[in-house]
Image (cartoon, rainbow, N blue to C red; front, side, top):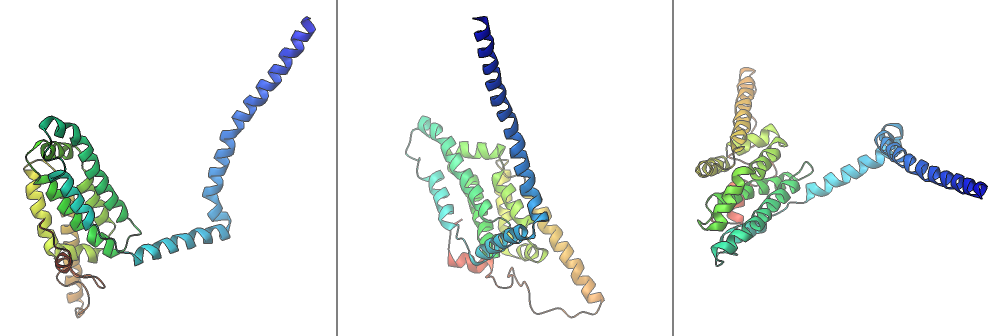
Amino acid sequence: MSGFDDSSRAIKRVRANTAGDGHKTAPVTQQRHQVWKKSAPETHPAVRDLIQDALNAKRAEEARRVIDFDPKCKSVWREINITHSRLSESRQYDASMDVFNYVENSIESIVKQCGPFASAGTWYNGLPVLRKIGKTIAMGPNDVIGSEIRKEFGHMNPLDEGMLSILKATTLEELTAIWNDELYEKFKELDSLAQDYCLFPQLEKVFELLDEAADDDEDDDDDDESNGDESSEDGPDGGNIPGLISWSVQSAVSPNPL
């Protein structure tokens, strides 16, 4: 009887060790797979070419697409000002976090679509819309929804940080065009409204970035003049970037009271 028990225990130990060994090798296999994914483009030219072709196709697709964010802007305005306006104060308070999440998700969606592969036309649309959303937040109603939204955005900075991330991906020429355009003054207007409620502290860095770009561009112009270079007739003029319409023209195409 004892011999049978010993053999049974031995079989169980073998099974346990087999299962244990299997579990131990899984992480190793995953780790090797991760290493292969990182090293494959370097050691296999065909893989590198496939990845580069996919990236080029993605860039070309995004470069051809210009996204209109105005519907999202209007939807945010309606959510803050209209949708919950007839609710009691207690129900507005209950709904306030859902409204904040809706606005935050809308902002993050715009910023994401204005990423590194986005066309200049897309982020040209995105920046004014983010400003309008910021103004909607700052000038929202004095009811519970409006107050709670301003309170939440006093702690969270997705809007101004989103603006900053978009601008950091642009060129000196594009930054200078914004500095020379009326959008810069509208950013200043938003900053003035925001200070009344301690909103959007990263706007200060937005202005620093734009002002530095304007100073650098002015220094480049001075260097060109000192070298006897004649200024080109092509390039930004009053906020125009080659191939794109100006901020003021865009505003005329899709008017918005904000």
